[in-house]
Image 1 (cartoon, protein in one colour):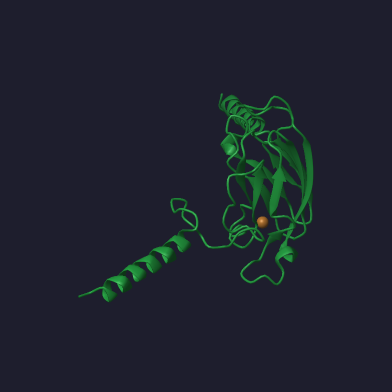
Image 2: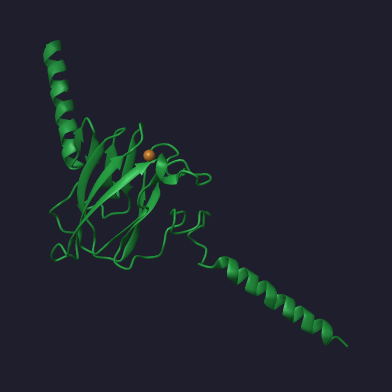
Length: 209
Ligand SMILES: [Cu+2]
């Protein structure tokens, strides 16, 4: 009786694990993981694959050597593709430790948790394919290992004309954190407002009786 219960529990947990990996379309090997791969299913608004893109992106310390404050980098921090295109990325890890190349914000009906994920073990490479949506938009690319994004493994995927550069992309945008509720060029607006106020005050002083 006890043995049969253990067998049932084991079978159930195996089935759950298989279901989970199928749900996430996970491919695991000794060299790493590719999750949520999608080479065929079209996003809503796409009638066909518009184009096939292929990129080989290297990750490692040497790509930010000599840049203050950065420890890890990528050979390419920005990837530009056409809407509805199929994107194949070969991610080459040139360090001894694990690195990831992850895209966030993709539609959840195609990519569970909105994410496409390549992970390469130290000195290994992994290849994965996904299809981007029809809208012009910028998506965050990063490595999710602790502190790797803060230390430089941060990029952007620009689909079509994009929706504005993300902050802190090496070689593209500055590293200052900007709250999303603040308007663009907020610094220039503040300086302009201060100058106008100063001019008005000066004028008022001149015309004082
Ligand atoms: Cu990393």
